[in-house]
Image (cartoon, rainbow, N blue to C red):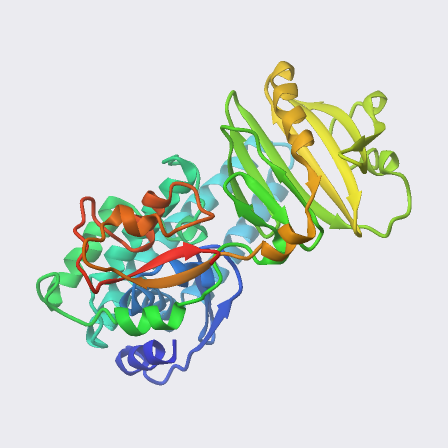
Length: 412
């Protein structure tokens, strides 16, 4: 990171501005900046980037936010909109429609203003990385990779953003095309700038991938909790994401599963806990104590709006594990809840010892290797072939050359 930062600082439009870069221990894909030159990038973003030029593109973009005072401008604009909204509410205390309309218009203006900032940051960032000697086309390349990764996790839903960076930095085809157009000022694609792939790959070899071990390790549809000593498996057809120990999974027939855990002092009954108010629409008569795979537990049902819920909790090793199964039809719940509960079990000592976190590993292609043979070296991730292409920014088709280096995700 120091090598990238040093090159960018010398090319920045405001050489008097100093920057401090912090790498956050988070699996999410994100980067952001605060006034004063404080830049933050997650290890999740570093794992996704293919080379130094792509990280430089992200940092150059965020540096532009700082040098152009975008953060200060956004705060000032937000304060102005809030004051305007309060005035409307005071002038028209009984006209809720007018108040809501003013608020909606304010949010639209803020969104448009933010988009203008993003376009400006793109332009300055691409110019900065190009002048710093990096490949200016890396900005468009990484925007494309992030969008591909987001589509992979969300099934291509345009209304869902799994990559946090995309929530504030939308990756549209028009924006990617504009980024390539701006990069062309430095020369034709593939002919200008340094990618910095080798030294970047050396730097991220062994980087933790995904949630920290304390948040649980996803292996396919099974979540291992080695620090607690239990595991469970989501039913077939569910796709899960583990974000900081909160597992959210979508499944067939408009169904979903949510899991998390909280620390527990061991006092009080689980039936009292499940009825303590953290579940909306709880059917109090449904709450009962049960044993779930030898663990103390409690179950209940609930309903809210058009949704029906099965809830169950278990207590183990200073934690309460909380499971919520949701569906828009009550009949859909049992075929999901039953196998989920039955899959919950204690891990053996051997399983706990062998539960290793996923890491980025750098491998070198041998003669005869293909994308498929290299993807087979991945483990612990869904659709290894698709994931291998995405994390390495590969086109389809792609011909592997002996001696090329690639990222794989593996627990080995």
